[in-house]
Image (cartoon, rainbow, N blue to C red; front, side, top):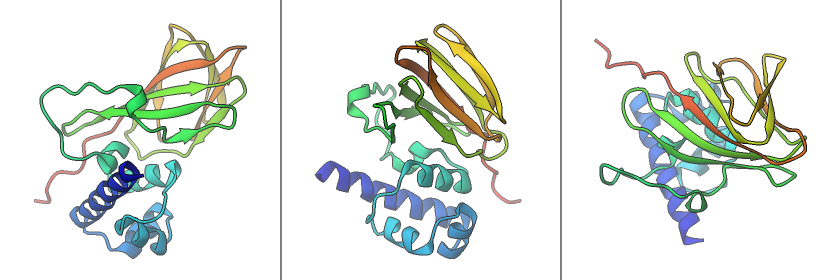
Length: 194
C-alpha cells in the first residue's frame, strides 16, 4: 500500500507541476482533458485512483508522456526495468494487461509498453494529440490492429506503425496469447514563447 501512496504522491506532484508549466487552471485542464474539476483536485492531493484512460487524456492535454506523469526523478545513465516491477496500467477481462516499462528522456520522448492480449480481448484507445506515432511489434501470437475502422492482422515477427491521432484498437487474435511491444513516439513540446 505504501508503494501505491508514494506513486500517487509522485503523480500528484507531476500533474500539478505540468499544469503550472502549461499555465492552466484546474478548470481549464479539466475542460480540455474531459476530467471533472473534483477529480483533478483529488488527483493533485494524491487521492483517488485515476484509470488508464484518464492518465492518457491528462498526458495528451499537458503534452507529456504518461510515464512523465508517474515517474520520480531519473537516476543514473542506464535504467533497467523488469516487467514484474511495473504495475499494469490496463488489465483486460480475460487476463491481458499493459505495462508502461519506461519513457526515454529528451525533447521527443518515446514510451515503451509491454502488452499481453488474450484471443478476442481488446483495448480501444482514444485518438492521441496530432504528431503521436505508435508502433506495435508482435513477439508471440497474433493481433488485429484497428486504425480508423480498418483491420490489420499483425503476426509474430511483424511490426506495424501508424499515426496515433486516429481512433485505434488492439485486439488479441488467433488461438494463443499475443505478446507485443508497443512504442508511443511523442512529438517535441512547444518551445519557450519568444
